[in-house]
Length: 423
Image 1 (cartoon, helix red, strand yellow):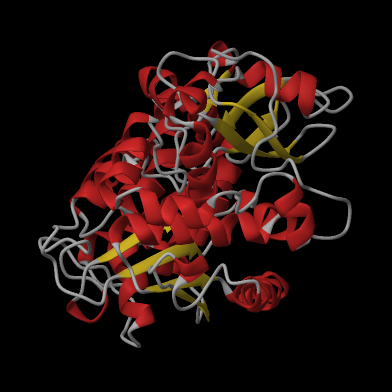
Image 2: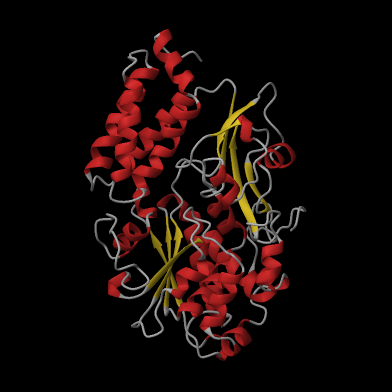
């Protein structure tokens, strides 16, 4: 297990410009790609990713190799690989940084992941605000095609893959797997409850594997260096690889930091993000983005890995750490996030469509000095109802709400007693 920061995904990051194809190749990019596609089977690549303990970096943390294995050997063609670059959750910006740092790492990751499931078409689904990244990707895809790394019969291996960039029409719900596939097919982006799963019937009824940008960029390094190497990059026994931690809030140096998976939260803040701002003291954070639970000061030294965070009642999610100091009203933070989730709901199911505005209004009344004591149990009850929603959108939105009521209930009650915000 590694306690020393190791740059793998951001090793070619340069100030104010992306890494070129030549620079990516100089660092080992595309090295031996043709031989890998010729000499290794899709099953071998899948097993390597499973053995490497690569979990999805988009929030769900599902084993990448296991997901690929759910595409049956006799599944129909064509098969699709979708890269989810629809990074719309507040506080999350790691994929944008990765795309602007080294787009060919994503392209090679898609080639190898596509080969592992025998996909003929790759699609990068990107949020509309990332127009500059979309143009960069389109340009670098053309460059990769001209160099023989993409298109028909890649490097004479017999495997062909074409990649296109699809600009989203917008809305956070498009980041949900089945909603994203509906959006790609020109349908209303409502989630669909499996079965069948997308790896059985996805885009246009064909097997489709969807992975996050950061996840796919890990793939070339695992294939070239092996599962053992990848696991040993982490500094916890349950982790593997490095992780891009996107730090924002009341710290001196907000930004993206690539560190061993399992690096303690306190180390990320103090040694890499420059510590808390002058006069600020750590009060809490959202450790994995807007849909995770608050992590209070008592867990300040928790390793930032999936399992350790689960044990203290939160989630790693996307690894977007939103830091709040002692002067921050966490009720106001939660209200702000609930406003976002209320606006972004697709409105498909009753718990989400009706429950989110109800909870938002209760929080707003308490924050504005109109709170009543019975509103706290009302919030408890309504938050629990939202776990009956059709997809994971509403339960995710309840992460900040329920942890606020559990961990900072006295702060919420103080709003009611004082008749307004104590901050």
